[in-house]
Image 1: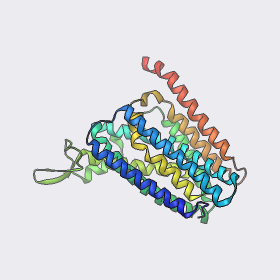
Image 2: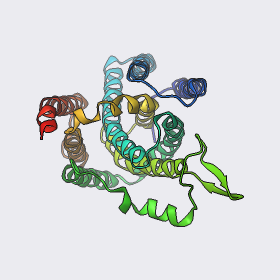
Image 3: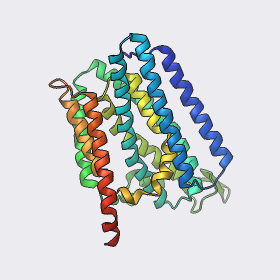
Image 4: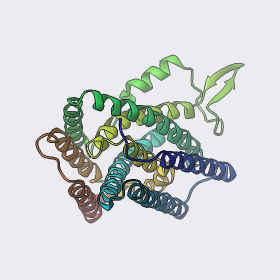
Length: 319
């Protein structure tokens, strides 16, 4: 796996991630078990998005300084932006599943923050491993690109047919297995994952939620990581765009949870994006679709989907 990013840029990225997680954990601990309002969630979302754009600017400057080429710097910067936008949009679908899980288990909003924070750390570790393995596989076996592409197309078709249908957690095999393996308390014990009843240490419903959130991270990582490899094969761009999209996931969850019903058509747009990215990957040896064009397609689909969602939301609410 080859990357154009200098070593100091890797180190800077690692430092930013560690500091960001530290700040998030400190803020989380300071707030305690209390609700996050829409205004606070919006402010934090803007902070994470701004940080991502600033880092993209740093990528541009570092690549230009290392290569002396403005064209290469522009290309890498566009790759990061496109990858970030794709991962951020797919994370929205992830958030809707989180919302379903939290609703199913009736998790109080002031207990959800800890689960999301642990889920974010787990997602970063998981995706780092999967990206490194995926990058190595692509370097060794070029034909895997076609497998990834076909997988994304099938996933997009499946997402389209499933859009608008409410998933049933009662039929979730992972949840059924957990209930068979673990005794679970009927009530929550604060933010604890384990509690003691009748002298026996048993899991709380919050632990079940954490397990399902972790499983969701795995499923969505399998979908989203091949999508970014369709944009670039540079492991630095793949990893950084993924991680920066994940860092703001907690704030974005509480923001979107308040307006989830207004974007009821978003899954259709995400399905089209996956099919487009999968097709781009399958055509890579025939015609390489420019990154700028891919960025325009993704932004156009998202904008159109959100606009149609907002326009049709009142009609749906009257039914």
